[in-house]
Image 1 (cartoon, rainbow, N blue to C red):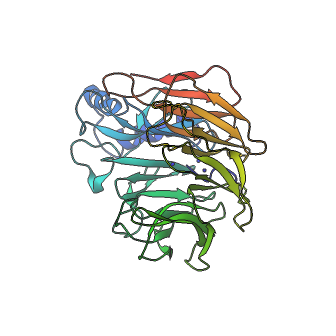
Image 2 (cartoon, rainbow, N blue to C red; image 1 turned 90 degrees about the vertical axis):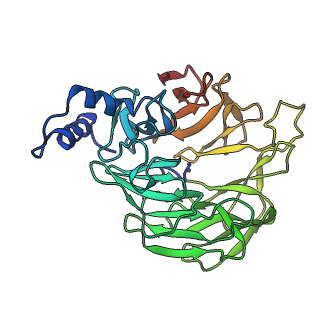
Image 3 (cartoon, one colour; image 1 turned 45 degrees about the horizontal axis):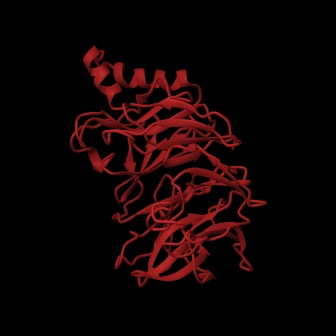
Length: 374
């Protein structure tokens, strides 16, 4: 999970306003005040931190939380905290235990904070709209099978790909937000159309086509499904730049380290930012030779990625210079701050498979700040 906020892989106003809304939701409208034990139980749903993102104004964080030490179906919620990771509290109507309404928070995959009062959340194969202070609802009446989705810069359209697996043929579906109306179906149902990235203006989509495990290149199309066009014969993981003028993508085969390239959405010669190289030895590169792209900075100058040693790095999109960040941690998810000066980084668990740490990392280098751990 990148108008120049994201092409994405993202407020509520002041923190006090959000916390006031939570108090009103839980203790007003004729309801009896919550007992202290109930308050503690709700807060426990925010123990761990998964899929953290910034609010559009950079003053708060949202994440998928879970109560620790109580199994995979413990209390969990969509949580909001201050930008320093403190005062985390569940959004109203998102806390659940055991089975959840509409499968909310059973298998979290993506989270975007798209406007001051609206978040979009992917859970298993569904997309949900989560109004701040409102009730989560599925986006439209789609049957599911959405493995990955991206959001345009205005937050009013999403492009959702079919499941990225052999024999999971299906189109990219473009939906309006919040009504969930179908804008278009892109790529048809004879091929797998996966890993879509929608243009910042919401008018085009770039995505990968394949037949089972046989790649068919990177393609673009209009959001309504028209003007389908082959962009590159080989490559994967395309990401539209925030200004809409470039598409970043990977090209290469395992076990070698792939190249990171840029190409105009209108076609033409690609520019190599990071060349592909053989992995120097077993264990030095990710076992499958796959680089993970975490998204463009909102100002369009840098791309965050996971390097061959499973470390976070950023590359300058103008000159290809690479800067390593968080040298001794393995990133699980990364979100750029709205001002492009910091990254919000969740690392993989280092002990007991419980939860990873959450860091604020200066994009220009410098000492990271640990926000949350367990």
